[in-house]
Amino acid sequence: MKAKLIDGKAVAEQINGETAAGVARLKNEHKLQPGLAVVLIGDDPASQTYVNMKSKKSAELGIHSEKRILPKETTQQEVLSIIEELNNDKRINGILVQSPPPPHIDEDAIINAIRPEKDVDCFHPENVGRMLNGEEDGFMPCTPYGVMMLLKYSGINPDGKHAVILGRSNIVGKPMMALLVQKTKGANATVTVCHSRTQNIAHYTKQADILIAAIGKPEFVKADMVKEGVIVIDVGMNRVKDASHPKGFRNTGDVDFKNVSEKASYITPVPGGVGPMTIATLMRNTLKACMIQNKIR
Ligand code: GUN
Image 1 (tube, rainbow, N blue to C red):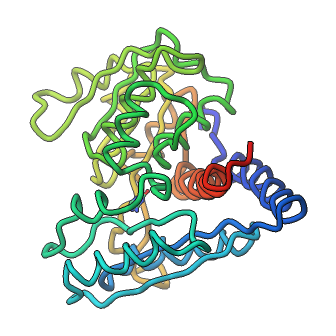
Image 2 (cartoon, protein in one colour; image 1 turned 180 degrees about the vertical axis):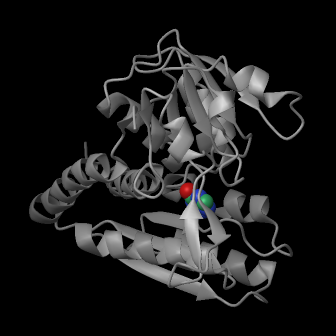
């Protein structure tokens, strides 16, 4: 393999160490413990795994965590009343509703019901707006923020580089675009966003200095779609059937890692790349939420 591996696990551990230190300081100096509520509606196995990982990491870092696992038949009104309860719960500083919810749930209405001070995902329109305007003291969306940190810790400066994003979701593609294009240190990229209606995607991916894949298609990005020396960030997490694995499936990214890593200068693995960063930034946001709500600098 030619590319340098970007070790998301190692970077996430470093950030989690800082968060744990912050949590300990809050406990010692202010007798406070940050609290995170994670809401899961339905029984999607991948979502269950993510929710469990978030709760486990909270416990490891000293953050109080509550899991609310709701059956898939839960009504919109029932979810809204749980959000209201969590909005008013002093032990809870951060609220996260795992996406995607079942189809009968209006996700936007749920997000809008979360108090912006507790919106550690940075999905609420008020927080999205602040982030888009370049306010740096608010929340940052977990996955794109994790990607920015991976670039920083790898010594990669996006300034003046052409970043091509595959995917325009509210969770990754759109906020990723906003963070990369920002007129600030560690950003200043020229950004292109490709999506399902883009014609001749390879035309754009071949021009990428930094390629960020977040379209949810296993091994979509092939070696002949990228230029020599490209920096590849793979946000994909796809379950593909594989009888040779004990669980009957394996997780793979949106990039054909084996072949693309022969051409790239840097690449993130899946798993062990962006995934651990998403959780680390969530923990960091939860600590920040607790500090803001208690007016601690
Ligand atoms: N589903 C996939 N990524 C995320 C995330 O960062 N937050 C939430 N709430 N759901 C997700």
